[in-house]
Length: 354
Image 1 (cartoon, rainbow, N blue to C red):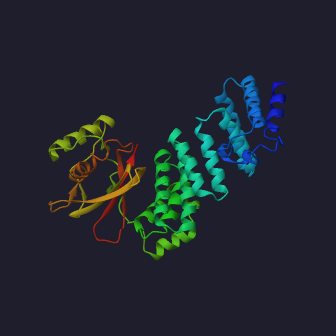
Image 2: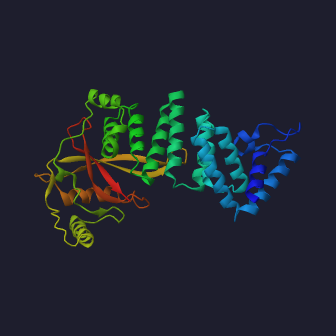
Image 3: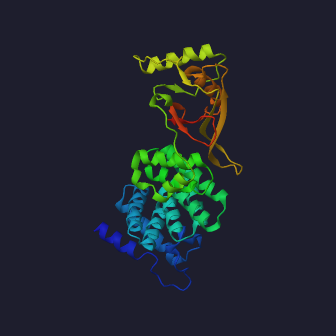
């Protein structure tokens, strides 16, 4: 009988017709943040009392209502979904998924600025939900289509990249990043995210994006597998090394400790160029004081007439970026991805693992 009574109360929440009661607030996030009338407050109290009788805690009751809300949202019944999210909000305001739901519904209604505020609330409560970052990115990209302001698109790209740091296997995000970078004259980024998408699910890339890559001659460099250093293990979360000799010793010890049978040749010539451009990513604060992901590049040089040995290349890369990597999650070297950036100097993006 408890479940029947609960359903009865739930279905009649805010059905009162008192003239002094604000109308339509059940379809607004947080009930529109308005002052409710006495009758609405009474119904709230009755609803909470019924939940207390049915569920072991209000937090558990909130999760139940959030699940109902997502089912309704997936069925495109957004008004009903909003009612359930609001009920969950009454029960437990600390559940991040409520604000994620608010943001999705507002975004679906075209209220992208409002949706961003709710995504921020969700992230403050739980910053490790990759889907929230994805939803926030979608709202930024929709705003970009509306305003054509590049800074807004860049914020969307940053949110997509944050989502990938949490869930790096999401092919959809790589595809969306490829689409976002198609609006920039950044040849390497568009090609990079097309390739990363293809490695997981090649069906997600719009054929028009591939045509754009071909038109702009944005093709991945053709190299031998051994030239991407996937056999080398290293972590950038250590201090700078005072000499190549000390670094070489640490590099060998690190590889042997993790792979006892390692036979890595750190003296082999990795690349015969005298200069190499290296790109990497890290998190920091942007000009607005918000956490953002940055992509930086730098040039390493050698005086060796034969080119870069493996140990010299990693030594110079390590000393260049290790201080930036101190508080990063993705500090493990997992090889290099080469790209043609339109110059004669080789360009490699560090594959950073967590």
